[in-house]
Length: 251
Image (cartoon, rainbow, N blue to C red; front, side, top):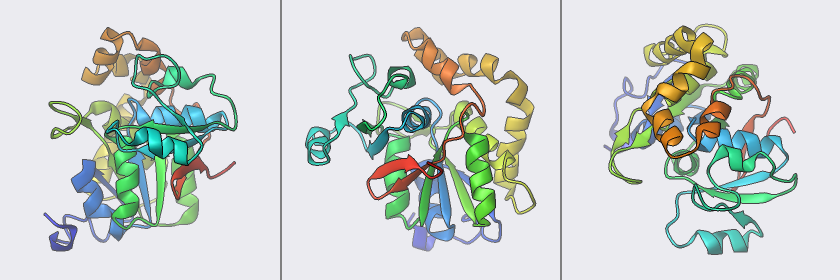
């Protein structure tokens, strides 16, 4: 359904803090709030937090579709490879030693695509959040006093372009951001996400490895990525999308 045809109730109108899922949820909220927060815990948002926290600039890209190399070359940037290949990839652990000043094109079918999509859908500001920097992002949003739509990316059924599979880790990441925004004004959807995080916050290190996405990564040899993603409030980075680039709003 076109965003123009959505009912005000589906846009969670009247609430300062709102929550929804994936591209359709993004389109419902983006033009109705002043800040969109994109959450993709495993692994885009965690990768962005680590890279930007080390002084790198991230250029999100929708996915490996054959045009990403020219996009990187035009912007004098490195191109992240597919997870499991050598060098920098979408795997957060591959970015733990990225040099300050690096420019990295980071293709991702979920978080990266939503970051671009938020701007195209009318969002004034786009912020990327994970469990690692949820508190920092929540405090940043709270200081602005703006309306905010927190969008959980989810994963995909049947490959990179299949229907959204709601993912527990993104629910918890979104809830962590919402829980860090004090005051009233949460929609019921946002309040439910915050409640899910509050229930799980003391056991994140144990829970993320047991999620479907966490188990998939561990089976594939990426246990370190899950460990990094579960480190709640480890970071004070607030990654914001400025043009094509994600940089630290507080840097």
